[in-house]
Structures are given as structure tokens and as C-alpha cells.
Length: 237
Image 1 (tube, rainbow, N blue to C red):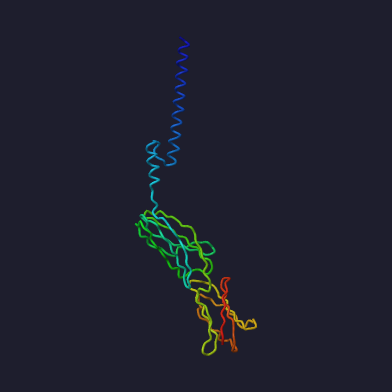
Image 2 (image 1 turned 90 degrees about the vertical axis):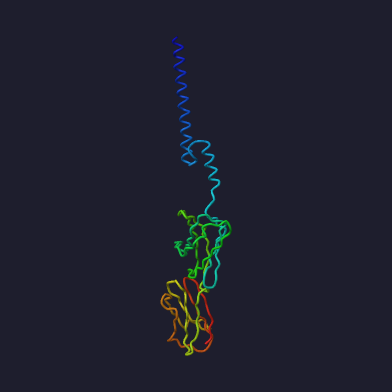
């Protein structure tokens, strides 16, 4: 009789332990799956949720993002393969400091299942390296960033030249919009000697005339230097 009771007690304890382990195991699985947002711990719900993730269509599919340098601007172009609930694009640019600032906001087509072309003309690019990235904004405020692309813009793309006036004075034109700093203008003769030098504040003086410079007739070389870049021009008096 005693042995029978002892056996019954041990059997009950074993069943309790197994039941507790089973509950702990199930709770752990549900907790982990809930943390991964796979559903409510039910196999059917999980499968449906995973299928929903597979069926998600991204709001915008960016096909290309390119730059083209012209004489007076940088053309930024991009294409999308399809758009769903898209709001607009924000074009950002940075220089060598890598600090990006928004320079344009372009409205999106919102809904499209075909290829859509976009373009923007940056008419005031930075001298030197220009970095661009595109921020796509959905209707719900979700934002997606593109890869960064870059190209160089040189002084030769700017309006910068010298000429002699009717009275024989040397005149220079330095037109670099949206820039700050000084352009160093140096005048050389055929022997390589410096006959004139001037620092021109490009934010204030687009046109500068060497009123006190008297030059003999002949060939001269004009050098324009700005932010490490130099362009030269030959001029005959």
C-alpha cells in the first residue's frame, strides 16, 4: 500500500515537471516570435504575416541617379521604375566638408507603374568636388536616402576673362555666383615676370580694372587662382 502511494506521488511529480517544462518552452517561443513581429505565436498567423512581408511593394524604386557637368551648371538626373504614395524628393549637396544641405525639393508623381524621369539644374555648384544625395519622402513621412554620387566643377566653367579697354587699361571679369573668397589675378609678361597682382573679392567685385597699370604693346599671360585651381588666358595689347 505504501509503495503504491509512493509510486503515485512520484508519477504526479513527474507529470507536473514535464507540464511546466512544456509551458516554459511554448512561452519562450511565443516571446521570441513576438519580439520579431512574426505574429501572435500562432503558426497560421505567422505564415500569413510572413507572406504579407513578401508581398510588400516599396513606395519608390530608384533605377538611376546621375550627374552631368555643363559650362554653367551641373545637371542632376534620376529615374524611378514605379511609385506608390510618393510625396517628393529632397536633393542635398555637400562640398569637401561633407556637410549636406538641401538645395531643392522636387514634387513626385505619387502614383506610377512606369519609368518616370526627373531632373534638376544646379546653376550655382561649388568650385571643386560636389557631392549629391537624394532623399525620397513618402506620403506618410517615411524617408529613404540614396547612395552619394559626386563630380568636380572647375573654374573653367565660370565666366572669368581679361580684356583691354579702348583707353588701353587692363580689365578683368570674375563672375563666380554663390561663392565667397578672393581670386588672385596675376599678370605675366613673355619673360615670366610678374607685372601686376591683385586680390579681388568675388562677393563684391565682379569687374576690376587695373587703372594704374601701364603696359607696352605685346603678349601677356593672365592667371586666375581660386581655391587651389588656376586658369590662364593669353591676351594681346
